Length: 478
Image 1 (cartoon, rainbow, N blue to C red):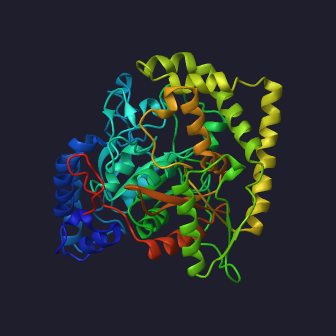
Image 2: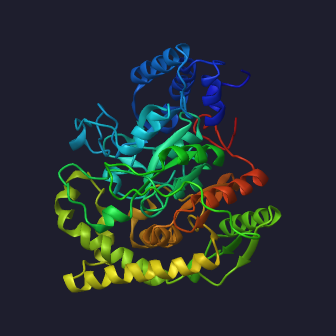
């Protein structure tokens, strides 16, 4: 094949392995060579599983030689966030305290990807315990670098996977999102990502020593994939969706819903809540809107999304209340300065009383009801994942002004996580040497509509990655 194997899409890689055009071993070796070349520059892959990946590839090749039918992701290498379990590997959460916390089994989404033939090639970096901030820096593994510009953060908390996919070290990445942790790194690194509906993918987000997660931990966090193209996201989506006895939250909803009559209506909200948006982000949303119009969508700018301020307040109060009892112990695991982000959150949003918490839970349902009505009228919503271009590392933990900028910038991600609806982040091009992008939000369990719209944008605006960080300077695609 002409190009290096790591440059191919997941679909092309799997097809080549299934057809015997290349071996799974060759595919894995191509990615291991890319990791050796690039990871020292970006520090995204934390625990490299080279020998395990080679063994899995050899087994795949033996199965093909024996005439067995291989899965839709045969041989495709993927990375896994340090907070998600891979059997026999430490799930460190980026903290030295969990360095030896070896997982007894794969987390459900890892098991699903393996069953489809994909091969885990390594863990990827996170902010310490995934709560030290947005910037991907852990006590155990250090800082991950944005491959486009070392002075900008790759985002987080799934930043390691986004960088691994953007630079070609992995074809797919497995992260999670409770308020932008997939979609923000996707925008900052120039890749695509899917945050599914709550209950679409089975998962297990329990932290060691905390086997009784509260409602926010159960309902806000969703696992999801990164890819360089929307088509590859769709492949991962089809594999990851469905019920699983390990997760009673996951429901057996069809992966594809009924076609909608007429042109699909898309509501456009450039500046949710009217708090301001950077000109390059405004341009990205306008560019995506034009692409959707060209594709035949009925695109309409609307005044705002439903009950934004109320939803943001409820999200903050519920999560702070749930987190407060464990905070004294958690902060000891974060290292010097690692507690600043959550400490500012706790100061800004004091825990609720039992009576207040019950009212907040009722408000949560009513806000979801308002969003369901909004999306019944407009099946899709187009808006920013983050209302600024990639920001400097550690902005959200620097001071109160930085924390406020971060919270404001991710507001559409926060509210859509709160109401549990799906969102697909897709690049729209480059602005001032950095990637730009948008997200498409949809009705619950209509990821298919989001993916179709995102693919229409991609078809007209192109794919940005893989990128070569080239001595850490970025801004050069290969």
